[in-house]
Length: 365
Image 1 (tube, rainbow, N blue to C red):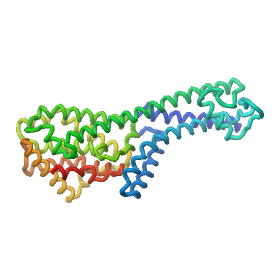
Image 2 (image 1 turned 30 degrees about the vertical axis):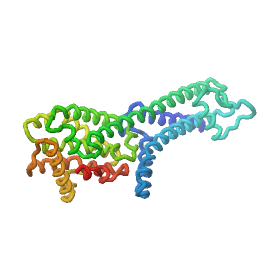
Image 3 (image 1 turned 45 degrees about the vertical axis):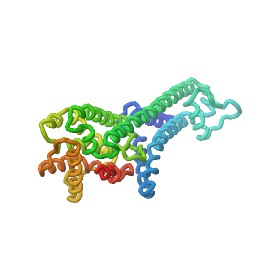
Image 4 (image 1 turned 180 degrees about the vertical axis):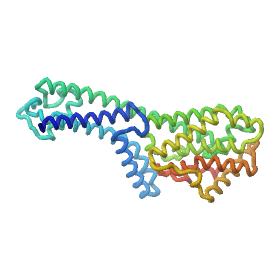
């Protein structure tokens, strides 16, 4: 009876691990992981605490979080499959599974060794299956081991490929803004002297890039845990720049030439995809209800207004017609209130401070 229960437990463990691999690697939807996803979240919480304690070196500490979590995935799945195989093989030691030389040990550590060996290549260890039932077990274990190894290696390569694309988009935003991370500077370069048709293609490219960024985080949630030293690689920085630029376009650009730009699909896509990305990451990884516009205090709104005044001055200097009245300022503040609280909550999650996300705005002004 105990041997049947042990084999059933082993099959259950292997089944749960394989389901976790399926949900993480093949099904690939944010928030659907079984065990690895939750373990990753706990590791991230631990790194956040360590980063806060490190203070000045918080970025360096947090930068190890993503690679460590990927390593955790591999170890978790390998140990889980080995444990399951060991539970299945343990009752058969000495009967269905025999040592190649001498008497066959029957302890559980030996069963783990035999089970782990069976996940690689049949007959690779000193323990051989001697019954048809255990020959089938070894064959299935070998197929599972090779399949999971291939899937995990492919998954890791795809994660780093998606990470490279995310960084490339961040670098593009950084370059187009004149390395300032300032939305006013970005628009001044995209539509110099009011040449909106010239900037439309760039806005369309950025909107497409944000849509791809949203989907890569949807397929590879582990990307959230990767942090780089340069703030412009941060998702929160990219979204901040995109949403601030759209807020300025919709609230502050004036004239008939700008009217069509405000209604284009490129501007709508840039706004919608950027906001969706931030809210999705926030609700998935930070838990709890996201903040609303009412969470903004008056001092913060005044800081936004000062930023708006600098931005419209920068646009006017570039020969772009702008609206500088109170209604334009209020429209900008209302738009910013829709997204800024989300980014203010998301940025510290990866050890970025608000001053870093907007650090170079003052330099641009």
